[in-house]
Amino acid sequence: MKKFMITMLLLALFGANTALLAQNQNNERLGLPGDNLNLYAVMKLFQESETLEGFERSLNDPNSKINNLDLNGDRRVDYIRVIDNVDGDTHTIILQVAINNRENQDVAVFTVQRNRDGKVFIQLIGDQDLYGRDYIIEPLYNDGDSGQTPNPGYTGNNNNYDNQNITYIRTSPFEIAGWPVVRFIYMPNYVTWHSSWYYGSYPSYWRPWRPFYWDYYYGYHYYRYTDYYGHFHRATYNRYEHWNDNYYIGHRAYSPVVRSRIDQGNFRTTYSKPGQRQKGEAAFIKTHPDQVTRRPDPANGKVNIQRPAVNPAPDRRPTGISNQNRRSTDNVNSTNSARPVTTPQTGRDAGTQRQTTPSRVNNKSDERPNNNQNVSTPRRDPPAVTTRTEPKQPDQQKASSPRPSRESASGRQSTQSRRSTEKARKEATVKKSENEKKTETPPPTQRR
Image 1 (spheres, rainbow, N blue to C red):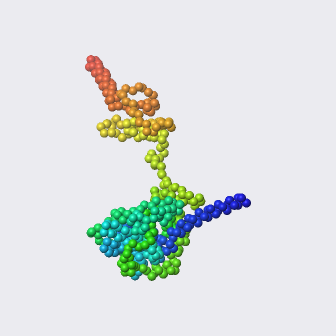
Image 2 (cartoon, rainbow, N blue to C red):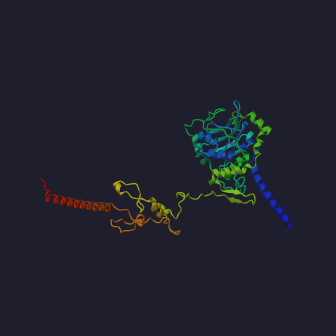
Image 3 (cartoon, rainbow, N blue to C red):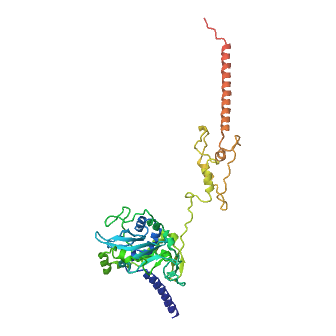
C-alpha cells in the first residue's frame, strides 16, 4: 500500500510539471496564423538592421527561421515585403504578403515617431486577423518615458519564464533614436523604401521552403524568449494618435482568402505535431551552441544549466605517431641530424652525396624517450665529424659511422694517385732495364 501511494505521488508530481510546461507553451500560442511569425523576434531583428532593404532580406532568410508564414496554403513560406509610408516625422512601416495576383495581406506594422526633442518611440502592431486585437510589442521604456504612472513594485508581466529568470533591460527614447535603421530612415537624403516585389516576382536570392510545424518553430525560438522578454513587452495601448486615420482606414490591406481559411480552421494543422518541439530545440542548439544557457527539466521542475560542448584541441601530429616516438620522427626529418639525406645540396659535388640505408632509419626510429620525458625537449646536436675515424667492423661501420667528409675523400684519392704513380714508376724502371739488357747482348753471327 505504501509503495502504491509513493508511485501515485510521483506520477502526480510528474503530471503537474508536465501540465505547467504545457501551460507555458499554450500561453505562447494564439491559435491564429500569427503564431508562425514571432513579433518579438521581428522587433529584435529590426533593432539590429541597418537599412529597410537589409531588414527585408534578413526577415526572409531561411537561416534566421523567423518567417514561417503560409497564408495562402500553398505549403510554401510566403515572402514578406516591406513598405514605408511617411507622414512628417512618423513612419508607418508595413510588413505585407502577396496572397495572389489580386489580394495582399498586411501582417504587422511598425510605427516610428520622433518628437521635437529628438525622442523616438517605436511599436510593432500585429494585424487583427492574424494576431487578434491590440497585439502590440514595444521596448521596455524607463518609468519616466513609458507614459504611464510608475509602479515601484512592477517588474514586468512576468519575471520568470518556464523556470528561467528574466533580466529586464530598459531603454530610453534617445537610445532608440540611435538604432541603425532609425538613424537611416531619418537621414535628410533618405529615399522612401517601397519593396518592388510582388506575387510571382521575387528576388533571385530567395527560394521558398516548406513551413515548419508550430511546435518546431516554438522550440527553435525557445532559448531566446528570455532575451525577447528582457527587452520587449506587450503594450496596452497604441501610441500613434492617427493610427485609424492614416493607416487602418486608408492603407490597411486584408485578404478574403486568408479570412476564409481562418474561419475554416485550416491553420490548426500547424499544431498537430507537439513532439516537434524537441527537434526545434536541438536545431537551435546545433546552430547557436553559445546562446544556450538554461533548460527546464520536466522531471523535477529545476533548471539545468546547458553549456556548449568544448571540443578538445585537435592533434596536429601525423596519424600513427605517438608522443613517445615524436622526437625520433623529428630527428628522421631533420636535414642536419645524424641521418643523411639523398638529395645533394647546393655547393657540393655529386660524389659527396650522403648515403642512406633502410636499416639506419629503423635504428633511428627505435630510439624513444621514456614516458616521463618531455616531448618539447630540445634536440641534441649531432657529434662533430672529423677526418680521422677509428676502424670498425663492416656491418657496424655501415650503421653508426659518420659520413666521410670531403677532406677524407680527397685524402683517399691522393693516396690512391700516389700508389698508382709509384707503380707506374716501377713498371717503367723494369721496362727500361729489360731494354738495356737487350742492347748489351750482341746478335748471334750468321753461318756462311
